[in-house]
Length: 281
Image (tube, rainbow, N blue to C red; front, side, top):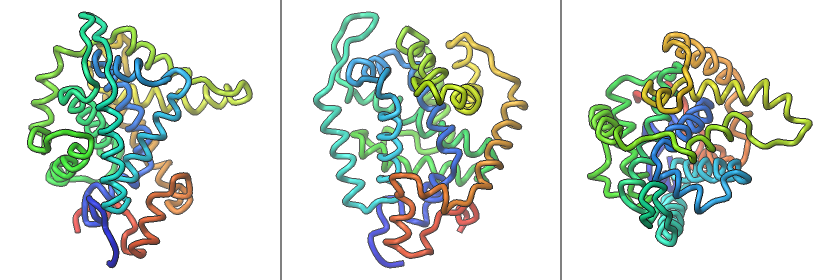
């Protein structure tokens, strides 16, 4: 395989996992989880037009993940530098104390990172993507690279499932479903859309949002104050959704912008094609 294979390379767990269509459900779960940190979500609310441009924010996040996973080393490093530069310029006000703080606070960056990576790993494994515990640990270790790109010290980032579980136990007392988290919840349940698309939103989008919410940990359901189905029911629904989405030909799914996977395959050859069976190779 010739050419720049990027920061993760086609041999990584990340390369295979991030090509799965359940990443979209996982991304919504990550938004729900990230919103439970009052200072982290306040930084979003004060520095972006979330209510009117939440779709744009979601797409920018997807583009960043796609670039850092499948792009060249230069493109990934450039994307990271851009994110770090933006974060350095932004601040927010603590909703409880009135204290000003930078959105590049390492504690906030670590929360956003862990909530995101945990969501990707949790949803994909629970929906049937074949990953052993050792491969899941390898995935978390690989993402110390993406943590570095946003400004974190890789050594301070959980590198396996035990470390990640310990981190969530430590941060749990800081979490709350305040007004900002409620705003995120409201948006995810009823995102603004064209009047003609409202029926589709009610039939399709809300099912996806409800599924993402249901896959959250029990403490998140308690904080939001909205119950979820029994875990076994949620797992069955995740598996059914994963099976359905994976029936859509990958080449067709990957045609959606910004086409990072197709560009990586054009750069590196057909051997770079992501596939679950390659995880253990």
